[in-house]
Image (tube, rainbow, N blue to C red; front, side, top):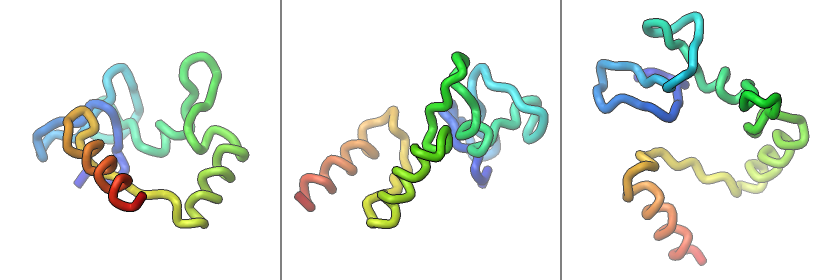
Length: 95
């Protein structure tokens, strides 16, 4: 429902857009309009760009993995015990 507003502080309510604690943006819902794109192109506060879009080398690495069908999208509550456990079970099953 909220598109690419992927973040670390998602609300449990479907009527409240997800937010990122401590992040600010100039658009979106309320005063916090942080998007996936802005997260991926922001530095970590010390000048380091840590996402896969942080450098051509990092992007090329992920692009190569994807081209070889080695990227598995996982959606879930990673603070809970179901999403990560499901990934582990899948990996155990495929060897």
